Length: 286
Image (tube, rainbow, N blue to C red; front, side):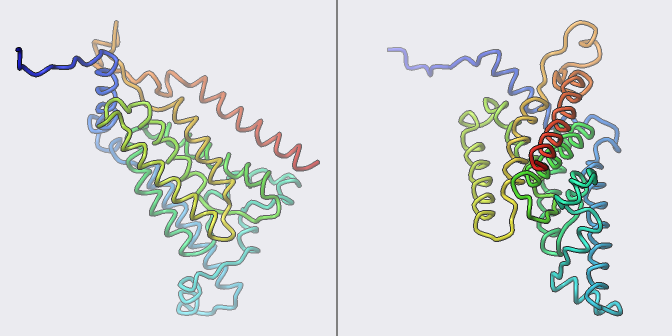
């Protein structure tokens, strides 16, 4: 009897997927030092925190705080004021229907209080730095903004009475984007990526479950951000294949989903997002 171990061959497609996965994870390391920095994530964080600092100061003044100590006390008490948030760009259906369409974007950069922005920006930085390295700066920025806008559109349509702010819809969007990346490269992971996918499902399920328990949380924004992130992540997730022809002289592996190749789909994505906003305005406005 032949007792030698049986060696299972790996299909060429699986080998390509594995190489695509590892290339996507480490591709940023071959770039110049500035390009290796997740500067989009840091700029978004800085702009969002600076915006919150300004609105938190306005909330404290509106509450009658005078002096630095009183303002700090107001911030630490998680004080919030919907009138201040509305004045600086919160999602307010009545004002949007009057023509303030920029409110489909500005809520992504506004937050209600210290706890709100602290949790959101912590989650965003942990995810954003990693995902921006994988997807690249412009692709990451496009997907973050589009999923965030779609989450605001969903809130506008399904929660017309609510004043909404926060980046959580866009953060759920990048969770969906990363989920699509893992799913597309599941053959490169242990047990075909089942443990990783189950972990992502658990994380998403727990966060959505918390949303249904905590009052005043916009579940429609979170779910729409997640679903749009999964869809757009599947379209734009980096997928590397062996370079051929003239490209093979410069690069060994080529990302077939990069924006330079998929710019028509990027344009379609923006157009579809605009159409969704127009449809929401049309039906929500009667």
